[in-house]
Length: 321
Image (cartoon, rainbow, N blue to C red):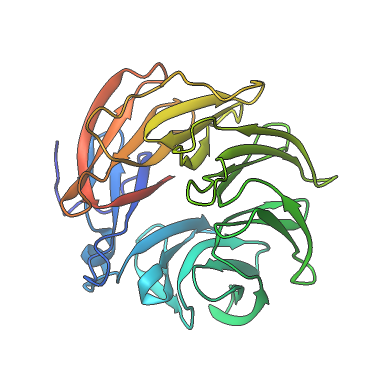
C-alpha cells in the first residue's frame, strides 16, 4: 500500500475518511483513498493548509464544490475547496457540532451534542445566524420534502423542522436514542435507534413515511445488549447496513431483524461503514484501541475481503467522491 503524502486529490474516484483523533489531542484528520491507484493521503488538511485540522473530526458534507468538515471539540466547521482542499472559510461559534446538512443553496443546519439546539448557518457568509431550540443530543439529520428530519440520542423522537420557517413543527416517536437516518429508493426514511440497556429500552429500526409522518414499520432487536449504530444504505437504496459489533445488512423489503452476520468482527472494533457507489464495495473501519491508527477493510458485495489500508486515529465516517 502506497502511503505517499504528496498525493492530494486525483481525478480518479476516491473516498474521504474523517478520523476523529484523540479527544483534546488536536490530531483530527481527513484521509483520502484513491481507489484506482490504491494510495492513501492520511492528512489532507495539514498537507494542503500547513496547519492541523483541530480536535475531533466528527463528520463532513460535500456540497456545491465545497467540503464542510465538522470539527466537534474545536466548535467549528472548516470549509475547503473540493478540488484543492484549500481552506476558504471557517464557521465558528458552535458549541459541540456533530452533523452538517445543507437545506438550500444558502442555508444549512448543524446538530449539536450539548447546546440543546440546532444551529442555522448562512452558506454565503459562513456565519451562524441563529438556532432552533431542540433539547437533547441531536445527531444525524436528513432532508425530505422540504423538511429536515433530526435524530436525537437522548429521546425517543425524530424531530421535523420546516426549513422555510426554521421551526420544529412535528415530532415522530421512534426507538430511544436514534443515531442515524437514511432514505430508501421509495423515499421512505429509516431510523436506527441504539436503545438503552440501563433504561430497559430495546434498540430498534423504524420506517417512516415522510409525507404522512407516520411510522409504517418498527422492528426491535431482541437482545438488550444490542446497540446498533452507523446505519447506511447502498447506491441502489434497497439494502441497509449497520454495525452491531459485527456488520449486518437489511433488505428494505425484509420483515424482521436478521441474526445472520454479513461481516464478522472477530477481534476488530468496527466503528464506521460505507458503501462505494456503483460497485457496492463495502468499507469498514476498525478503530482498534482508539489510540493507534485505524484500519480500513474493503469487501466485495458478497463479503469477501479485497484489501485493507491504514487511515488515521479513530476513522469514523466515509464520503465518496
